[in-house]
Image (spheres, one colour):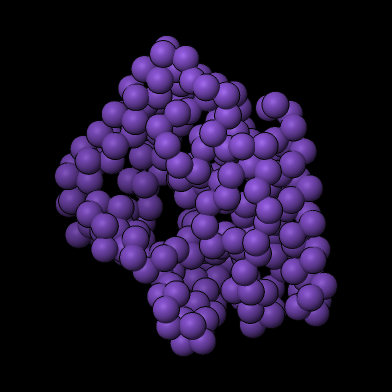
Length: 247
């Protein structure tokens, strides 16, 4: 299935444009208005980002008719946990601020230099990874993740490292296996169908319901190959099921 979907009507284009203005206008307004927040304790920034995420969800519903739902809450991990999530669109990096108390993303180092987003990501102590550093970056990732788990935070990693359109061939990277092994912690898979309504690239947003679903945790101690196979099978099966509900 293509992430772009069928040709958009003029009305859908107009509604998508209004939402884009809301999304980026909100980011600019909150970035400027939130500058004093950056001078306070970290939890100020986390609260500010949660409010931003909730405002994005409001705009999705009002402007483009996209709902938001979280399932599998019985599998939601407690504080200090590793979560591996399917990544299909920008919204995947926004929604966890709503359903986690103190989330922490693994993200590309380049994002931390962006105005507004980068400022808050740095203040919230997200884990920035320099992909060009290879083994050094992996050691830094493990060290930072261990610190965040000790602080009681939920470390969210996107195993494929980048956004993938629904139906694309999965491409899981080894970073998640290294974290799983070195942290000696369970890993909670998370599925989503977000790319159906909010494609990885482009302006168009389509009505529907974006669902995130927590799946049963993978216990620690599995061999790398077995872990990667179970993780990919679990996330892909869950995401494909959610995608089928919207198509």
